[in-house]
Image 1 (spheres, rainbow, N blue to C red):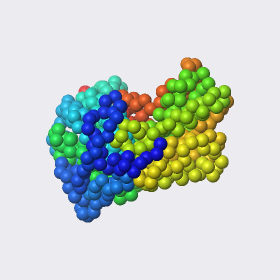
Image 2 (tube, rainbow, N blue to C red):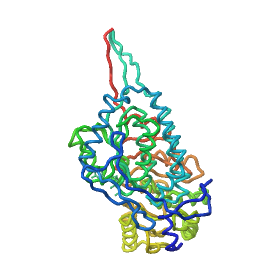
Image 3 (cartoon, helix red, strand yellow):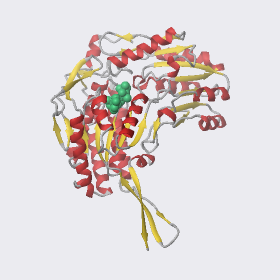
Image 4 (spheres, protein in one colour):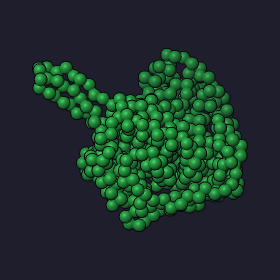
Length: 512
Ligand code: ADP
């Protein structure tokens, strides 16, 4: 599981000789991916920040600088919002019909598909996720998301409603206007697609602020959008930090809606900013501490596979990570033994070498945070069966870690870790586990493993979570709505439900 310096360094200078097929390729070649200084994208042009300031984006596999990126702030957000407002009110976009928007969204999907290899490389370079994952998961899901919402662009419609009296009453589902969107670093391209797809399909214009850790691919996709013909100002990308650029966007008086994915604490700040400015509409996809529940009658090998993927995928950096893994008492020991063996054999290293399933955490800050949680688990008396350490000294790699003897009131059982740290806990009965699973401020996702359909249905009805997976984990589809109960968020992304987040309903009543 060790990462050699050469392997880690390869992330910085990785160039693949051939594309990945079916998640399998064996070889890494060298040759630098060189990324020039990145300007932000406002009003159809790549521009410097008003202040002239820039920031570094780092390669998490090495800690080295990939490139400088223009650092946007309030002044840049103002310019982007102005451009988006103009495009919305009077530009060609305001006169475009659904089928034209669909055509553009489909063209963008085609362009992303055509540039799959380059985008996957940039994503892995900036985020650290294995190239095979970027190529086989992130980019295809992104393409599907844009195509799915292209399909909706000419089907956004209201109703004709019979009301009392001699009137014609109908509703129009109109775009909200200028939409601010703030996204995290764990799935930079895919989160952009979840935000842009429905917003653009419904006819809004957007100002996106990508995460400061991973700004490169949003700018690349903005360029593709420009090339395929999105009119100037429809799409704007302002790169910069959360408390400056992000805060300016969420408190802007001329932004009509803010869509956010990130931490619950940040979501609260954004909602407060929205409330204290112009009461802009808010949708939030926030943190989670998802229970993954394995009954004794489950297909154990499938449950192990699913729970392993459900926690360790994407270096554990998933808001839906199944970080509270509950296993029924009678199979607990066998399950723990098999899972520990599996975690021990997980290979951590260079994201551009297919020999490794796990890359680095996204940043030093995240790595330190994860290692801090591991320390707290040990201090609070949980038993660590494997992992626990940083891997190597370059980059931000962390060993897959498993804790048992975890109590519900320990920090590792309550807080979102966002790293490769699994807690396996024991349960005895269905009533007990329903209560324990729901005893959390979060409610993003949950999973149940059982062959008994009655158990599966009772559990999925009882779990307070936006998504419940039965005998599977991490199944996402552009058509399936996603979002949180409780402090995991407000609103749903994807599927038809996402359209509600990006339209205003207007009632028209005509005297006959
Ligand atoms: P993390 O701590 O994992 O980076 P965040 O919720 O802080 O998660 O980040 C998600 C996104 O929110 C990023 O784009 C970040 O820049 C942005 N962000 C952070 N703080 C704020 C804020 N105060 N206002 C608006 N956006 C913010």
